[in-house]
Figure 1 (spheres, rainbow, N blue to C red):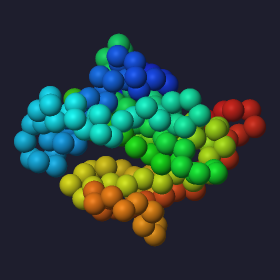
Figure 2: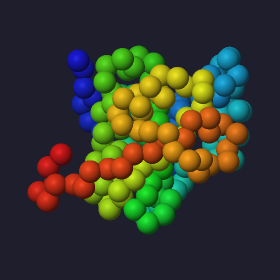
Figure 3: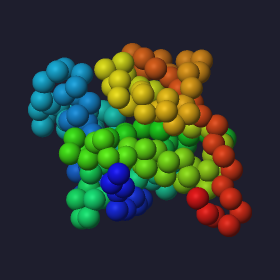
Figure 4: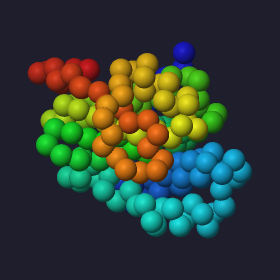
Length: 169
């Protein structure tokens, strides 16, 4: 099984952060409408639903690279004491089926625990069945609704293990 070479923090406003987020939005818009997203639709969605809070003291964004190529991303938004919300999870089609998504989610969990979070929650649209299955395999379970988004068909959460004192994962 191929594992990603690197998973690193990225500012969502940087060229690479913005580029992989454009890929995320193109994917979710295209999947929803069952056609390729237009550049105008992607830009409009990025403006109406910005990712600027995935940095500093409000959250973080991770980018997965296979060599120099960004092949995925995922973020955590801090939503309350000890709680975070996973968002913007995307794996490029060519990188799917190789454990990249699993590695990304595990790194999001690890970095969240290191930042003092003990619970992660997330929402999944019903058309993203493979993502829903991945989250369930990784221990995310259905919870009482916390989002009133019309796209939050599945609402899941997971309690995180505390980080080891040595920082080992």
